[in-house]
Length: 115
Length: 116
Image (cartoon, rainbow over all chains, first blue to last red; front, side, top):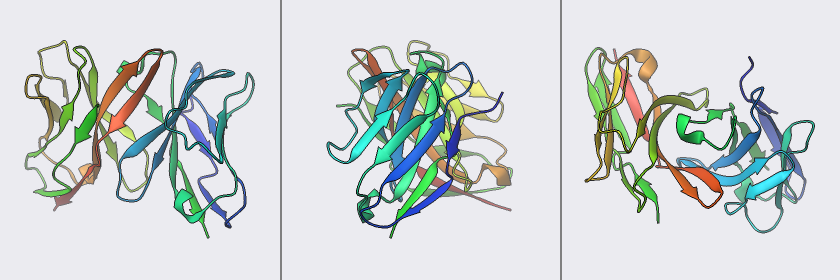
């Protein structure tokens, strides 16, 4: 049973380009969470999604950032018109239901570098 | 507001020795969950141990154990018989629930070095 798969592992974008980060949850998991880790910091919550629904996007910047988790396919975190400050590691986690009290399973992250 | 504080940014321990990582948190909830995650250089977030607040018994997982002091809102991690593979960043986290949502609130982390 494969874990949470994130791709790409590394992504380099020029300022103003778009970044698309993908997350395939563990098999049977229908809840996905995105976190951002800035250098020398802990992970910060961005968004919580279920299939075709955004449950909580309170951690998402109001502009340029969006997330989706379609009925079929991976969850996508999209950053439009990237800026240097978007450079960070972005992690996805999944759980089988609302019940992360067992601890979420994290992917290996995507390191985004904006040049 | 729920916050998680790890006051020691770095620690080191000799191989085979014991080390304790501290964590304090703030919450108004009475029932909640706490976690320690390990992040080695590979960047993978690995769950080390979890604690349910309503359980008075401290959680243990092999060489890892916690000292959970609910009244003091303290949640420290003890690593016994430290191994070179324990070297990593360690993050304390609190599971926050609000309405229909849930999320983890992380501390800033602590870098553990294990000396041979």
